[in-house]
Amino acid sequence: MNRNVLRRILARCVVALLLAPAALAVVLGLGGLLGALGDDVAATACARVALALGVVLVLAVVATSATTALVLLAPPPPRRGRRRRGGRRRRERLAVDRPAGTA
Image (tube, rainbow, N blue to C red; front, side, top):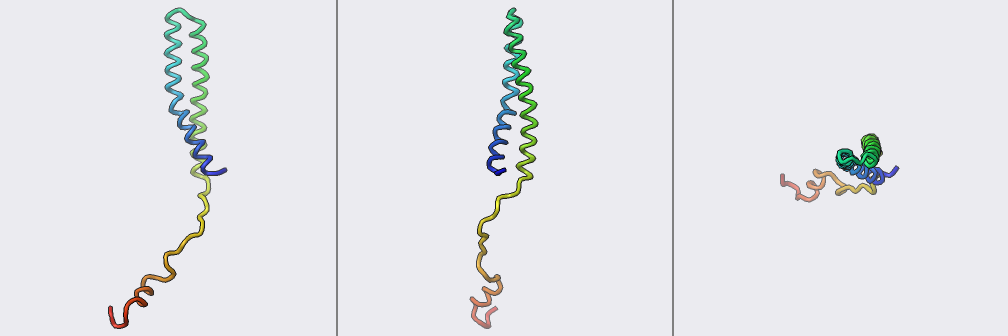
């Protein structure tokens, strides 16, 4: 799989990992508030949505760790046309560039 695709997937997993706990807290708080106000049907609905968000959070943790492992284990991209800086060694260049008799 392409390394860039893996990095995009990893970025989305990290975003889900960061947003899921906040959404979970909001839904649980809303469910508690609705339950205290006497709306049991809405409180139950919020509890079920919170359960689904908990599952999403666990899946985000697993997906993030698996994708991180894939990114680290993916082979590096091939190097294109490795250029050499000059064809000669430094000493050889200096020997040619300096006149004879100078140190």
